[in-house]
Each structure stands twice: as C-alpha cells, then as structure tokens.
Image (cartoon, rainbow, N blue to C red; front, side, top):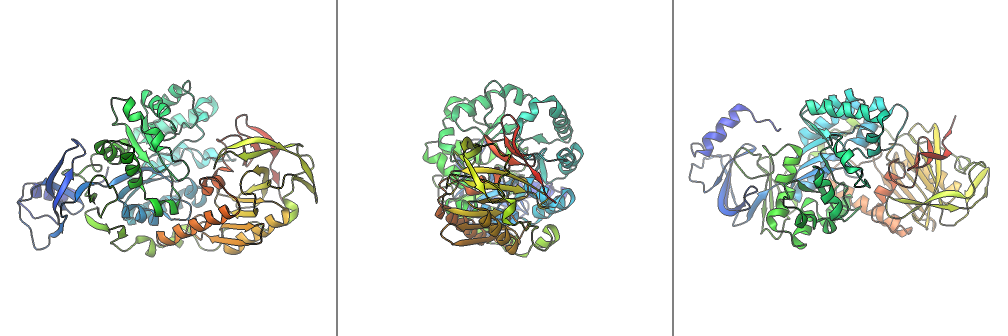
Length: 587
C-alpha cells in the first residue's frame, strides 16, 4: 500500500464534494475508465498526490489551484512495470526518469546484483533512498536465491534477511526464482517454503520464474506458493500457466520480442484480468529508441487487441497483481494521481505525464529536475575503482588435464548455449581450443582468488578479447581469442575502474566505464543509453549477431540455463550439474 495520511483523506472527501478547491485541475480531457472501459468527457481534480474527483468540475478553483488545459486529450492511468532490472548502464533513478517520460509511473525493480555487490544493509539503505527520491513510484523485490550458486549462498539469502527486506514498505515480494528446480528438491525446497510462508504472513507474495517448465511440472510449481510467471514464450504456455492459477506477465524486451506470439492467449481465455505486460529489463538504448511500457501497449494495439484490454494490462491488471490496486492502476477518487494524457487511444506514448500529482514530463522530456543528477551515489556505492585482478597470460590457458575434445558452449541465441566438442592444441603452459572463432571464457569474483574456465563458440568471431565487471555472480568475466589479449583486456578494465572493454581483432579498442559498482553510470539516462548503444555497436562490429549482449554476458555465469556455464564450481553441464572442468584456486 501507498500511505495516505488522515488529513489528506479529509481534504479528498471535501474536494470530491466540491467544498474545497483542488491543488491541480486537469480540464477538458476525455477519461478512460479502467473499471468499465468507458471514455467520457470530464475533469480530474487532484489534491496533493491523490485524485479527489473525476468528472465535470463545478466546484471552486482557488488562487493556488494549478489548472492544466488538457484540450480534448485522452486521460489514462500511468503505466506500471511489474518486473524489471535496473542494470546495466542506467542507474535506478535515471531508468525511472526515462520511464516516466514515456508514461510508466510505477516500476518494480529486481535487487539481485545490487544486493550482491553492496551487501544487505547498504543495499537496503540504497533501496529506501531511491524509492524516496525517484520521480516515479519505485518498489523492489527481494531475491530468495542467486542465479549462480556459491559457498554461503543460503546465509546471504536467508529467510531472516529476505523477511527483513520485505518488512520495509518499498519492498513488495520475493524476486523471480530462476533456479525453480530447487523447489522440487527437498534438501533445498524447505528453506524456500519457509521464506514464502514468512513473507505471506507479512502480506507479501512470491514472484515466479518457470522458464522451460513442462506441463507435467507446472502444477507442482504452482503449489509452491508463487504468484505469477513472466517466462511463457507461446500463447499455449501462457494459457497453461493461467490454468494453474498463476498470473501471466507477457514479456517483450530487448532480449526476447515475444508479445505478438503471446497475445493470442487473450482469445483463448474468457478472462484476461490476470494478464499483464513486462519489459523484463530492456537495454537502455532500446528504451530510448522504442519506448518502455508504452511500446508494449502499442504492440498490443497494432496486433488487434482492443484498447480496453491493452490499457488494462498495463494499468489496473498490473496494480492488482502487485497488490497496489487500492492506490494505482485507475483514474478514480482516492488513487494516486498518475495520469497519462494521450492524443488518442491509438497512440499510447503520452503528450504529458502527471506523476504523484505534478506534471513530470511533456512531449517525452522530463519537466522536473532529474534526481539522478544530484543523488549522493558515493554514500551507497562507495568510492574508488572496482577490484579487478591483475592476471598475466599464463593464467588463462586450459589445464593439460582438460577433456579433449573439449565441451564448448555454442550460443544458439543471446543466452542459450548448446554443447559442441572442439579439439584442443597446446598453447604455452596449457591447452587452447583449435577453432579460430573459439573464445576462452574466464570467470572469477572480485577477489580474484579463483578462476573458472570454459570455451564459447558463436559469440563474436572478430573479437580478440572482452572484460566485464557485469556478471550474474557480481564478479569479473573475461573472453578472449588468445591469452595475451585476455590479459590486456583485464588490465584495461582495471584502468577504467570497472565496466566493459572490447578489443577487436583489427586492433580497435572500446572502453565503457561504469563507475557505480562496475555496472551503472551516475547521472541522467541519456549518456547511459548512448554508452549502451556504443557497447552493442562495438560487439556487432566484432560479429555479434544476437539480440542483446548484456544478457549474454550476464548469463555466461548463471547455473539455470542450458547447456554449459561457468560458475564458482567450474565449467558445468547445467542439466546434470556435472563439473566438466573444476575451478582453480589461485594464490
């Protein structure tokens, strides 16, 4: 819930009766009703950050009332993004600013990387500060597990720590449980179920993630207590989740553009009130060029979805899923004044955005000072460069004991690898994959006290080396076609203090510093979007052909996607957990 003090409630009641003048009066609009689907001419009277009345205003207009002439524009509720990731490049405040400019006035952020990098207490303080300062309403989730297992994981994500976060008003639910197979193993499931029951007692809920789950397993996953899933990629998968009582968030992101294939689910079900939309962490320049939730609504409209259904998925349905419908998702008395003013319902990108009862954006430009520009980032992220190990070329070759042929992972798309054996040849003090396109992958944490190595195919054939401090395990990732190049890229990453560096085989080099914990940039959204675009262009110049390199880098070190990944244990086959090449401890 979003608190509303008794004095404000009393003002709302009096203003709704026409006994007091509003603080803001939006005149002459046509209001879309999220409850009935009607569009009717009227005005919107706002007191502080809440709507007092919707309809023709005949009450007083005081000297302090701001009157906004809507000129026949259509008013719809501010859009809600129920599941997104505030990384990489853009910071949590600048992402919210970009979202508001496109009509998304409420966002729910994943906490995983920031939680791992900052630790429990420092992250909790950051989350509170961001939610307090953001232009939009920003809420958070609290993960129950990492996306890449490590020693001590259960303590880091203990029931007590997760519950502590979810007692705070800026947290709504637990985050997506990517390793959903843990729910089916008694030795791991009981701790997770304890967490779910604890947070249910707090009035919170558990978000779900059932990517690749068969129809046979879905009932078991629904029985765990999770509320919804955003991982359906076909209409039939979406319908299967609805049948099990799960909410379905239809995804369309820079990684996967699934929405058109998912929308037919609306024709297969008599009820669409448990269906919402999500961008699931679109890259910054994708947002800058295409939009945010407004892009998803437009995609739905262009696919033939009726406006009432399209807008409700982005507003009231999302609010109800999150348990925020008493406060958000509709233009009605008592709700927070999040108002998008559109030319018409055929164009979901707003001309003007009212957020928290004030004009926040006009024609896609922020109308208030950006909080990201003056935020004290150092208080939360610290100062100084990211710790990057200084490794010479001798660290990177595979050991002589490596299996030959070696089970490499070929990228089938941006995130899925398929096992493909490659021959090895001797290189210096070890072995190296023979195919010219092959890249050795090296992963560590930010202490540099261990290294996991593997082989990747199909990533970028003209890449010599890449180093990044943006990984699922919050560590350091290096890819390279030769040991010397990998060492040089790692030194380059250390020199910029964290971020991403790309060295092409033609000798060109590209640096992308990310001063905030090695994953984000301070300040407004525009420079972050430009840097994200530059990073993608640099990799495409090296032959990267997939949809989103950010996710490629992120998921090289996860332990829930097939086939082969690098983890703290080593190079593993995900489905069996077999360690193909163990991690090596370093002095």
